[in-house]
Length: 407
Ligand code: OVM
Image (cartoon, rainbow, N blue to C red):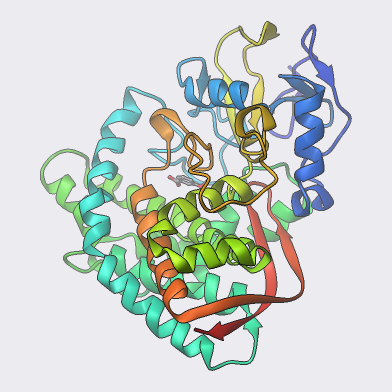
């Protein structure tokens, strides 16, 4: 069997377009829109020889592949590595990288630990932190929106919500980058991220232990589920690791991308200011428009077909969520950022049994930020050109100088 980037090198399927492109090239990761447009134009299923993978980027097929967990499994990894044939870089996640029925039990525990009620209970803390941070930033002439705001907010509030005794912000951000970059090929981006793996993995391992978690936090709730016999104590530790894997960089990216959207569309920001109850749908539009997680993979666990194109067992399916969220057949005018769009069905949180289990908490964080912004800030001014930070699975800013104008 010929392997490539940790998975089986399949042959191009009959009827599939072949596209000689590297979707993980830094230029594409930094400016993915032209790639999205061409991907959708080439066909429903596109073979990419460089990695011997199949990419889907039209809304319907992306949703089909992403949500059908019996044909397209997660247990073989949601990046290019196929865990059936290649050792994973870390012990696999017991919620992300697992299929039903095993998935169902751990998912249930996580649903409870991040329920709407739990998210609501953190709301006042989120709002108070947003007020303090934005008051502080209003005193500055201009600043980097990524390091001083987008990274600062979640690395302050999320460890608190989890109940971490020591929520080292740098380690949390770097671990997230590592987890997401490891979903791509063994390119310089992934290599640079994994360089510090031993040190950070050791820190994460300790941070997930029960004695490092305060009572009343979301982390302790997982250990309480272990006490109740729903999972083992070891599994509780792994689920805390999932919090730390998926809860920080995603929300950092969401906030950065929101500032990007609102800093570039002043009329839309004015609408939000005029009616702050738009904050929730504004965030959904930020997610649709910028897709913080631009792509995740699935693996075909048997021969099947999509849009009439035969898919061989072991095919890695690159589900380009960012492209589906920009499909004009679904959205009409996807290139316009509109806070009143109500983009129901966007795929930024995924879809199906693996749909983001932390979305209530993510929405509560973002809602706090947007409502405080709308109240205190009359205008978000972007200074110079924002710079994107190529990441194998995320569409995130590296830096963006901004000025906040006092309302
Ligand atoms: C995890 C996890 C869950 C969702 C996303 C993610 C790739 C990781 O359970 O570790 O990032």
